[in-house]
Image (cartoon, rainbow, N blue to C red; front, side):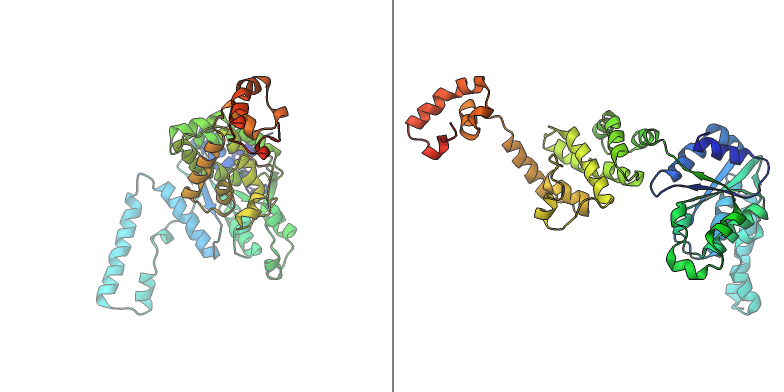
Length: 383
């Protein structure tokens, strides 16, 4: 079964004996799979309400519980907030009375601390749909792992909710938290996680969806991306580090480069420039390229990227955009690539590198100018 099918199967199971862990390296598309394929599946939407909560930077168990309840109530009372409004308005009136009378003893402080959401409990269904809690960015949470697992376990064990945890399992147990943990991670996991799915992404399909959903500033760039879908997939698949987030950023950053090239009507080799840019950015993100703020060093960092101008490399590495420098570099390139007359090609090109037609067309003019004294001996040594 595919990863998506496994997720659907877990949601459809009648019993709830624990949470499901979806693991995979950072940037491989785990969240994309959940948001765009599981949550948006037409059949699943008829049966389930998906509540995704990011744990990134959450400071306490209380903050997580509040976040879960707020999200739950926003779905429960969507379109029919009468009951919630009545309770909230009653509490507001009580708070206003306390403030007006100036009574701030124990009772007054208790009234002021009341939160309307405290009057509602989370249930495992909203209407005829089952609730599925999705806890994302588990490894980025600052809370002790034992406490965090305990919080999530309460939703499974005590309230009978389906729970999906999304994480890069290899990064769940950071060393700085080791002294706070009283149990090994595998023992904590065994208490909560009933099944672990290692995500094996279908990258070509994800990239197709990413390009299709990309909101470009111009229709031309959107068409440009669609035309290069297969090449984008090839670049990504050849890279050792599979980070979709980096690829998305590269596609977005190149739009600015593309617009500048288009404004100066220089679209020669734009496809090759784009692919070189994607390769370069992915290598930079993976730490394969030695970066430097010194342009001379930066230009030599990856000599194979011959389609990239120096200002574009600086943009890729340091996010420093210099419109003036890029326009200047493009104009210089345009000048260098202007077609030369046959006699001028004879001036600057070794004879053996020229075709017969160019030599025949330019030789007479070149020799005449030489006899007229327009050239020094060094100008014609290559003949």
